[in-house]
Amino acid sequence: MGVRLLPPLLTDQVWGVEAHEAFLLFCLALGPSDLNIRWKVNGKRLETPVTEYRHAMATGEVFVSSWLRLRGLRKESQYQCVATSHAGDETSKILIGPSRKDKDSVVSRDLKQWRTALTDHEKLLQNWKEAWESCGGEGVL
Image (cartoon, rainbow, N blue to C red; front, side, top):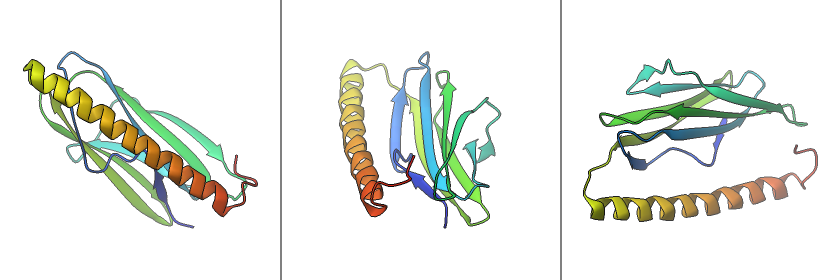
């Protein structure tokens, strides 16, 4: 039983946010009962308070959902969600930077983010469906 990050993963995502906007980052993981999630920004441990929900599964694994609420950015930053346990670790990343004020780029950015969010959501549903089917839907939650 290893550590598995579950969608939505942060990997290979680039977002732009307005300097004054608050934003949320989520990380989901499934693994052994000693599973721990920590966040880093630009390679350093993040000191911002992190909200976390843990749920013990019938299989002995634990499902962990972790999220951050952050204020707007002044410079481009890379956020990392690191899930660790005795069985190993997994990391996902996202690069977030301040948006340009160009209206066309804002519209373009928003459309791209919606398209990406819909694609990621579709993948999430497919992965959950496969996970559900692989265990026969029994003893999952």
